[in-house]
Image 1 (cartoon, rainbow, N blue to C red):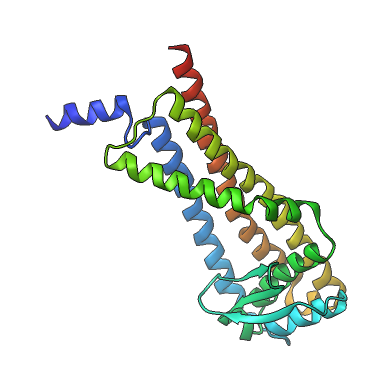
Image 2: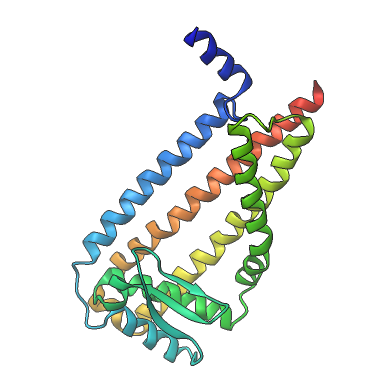
Length: 243
């Protein structure tokens, strides 16, 4: 009985996913796990390499040297919670990054300031990503809602509903792709400034570059997963149309 049930689940899909869909999710989760683990190891290693400025001081100096005077550098609770908020113009650094004087802290702080510079210069990819946020938020919420309905057997993927999935996943996949140039450009700006400011020599430029690379790879893994799921559902939709 159990074997028959598992076979039927494999044929019909589990929560709307066939074996292929489950494998895509598993592969994406594995890649994210490996990248996340590598990122944490690198940052832990580089957190023990001291420099003369704290993350907060690096951020304030970088902003000042780029003529940005209306952005505040503040501390935010948690780990890896660092981000730039364009709505209130704040560089938010996690508590450890804010107060720590290390290669890791400097790399993170400079990267977030890279986003502030993008905002100041109206970097087109950042502008596009900001405009997409409301639509992505709605699409993500709808996907979660539909997933919950499917778990309780209240939502099934038919020809029409598959295309709904495709449309919603298309929005989130496009957002993940738009995010890539934003993140890589912010890291590029960070490395250029760290080198030109003279901090690169003391903080070992290659280590900062490596830390930023692995941070960016988390976005790459997410983008690959989003695009893979989108293509999977497109094939599902085209297959159902031919039936």
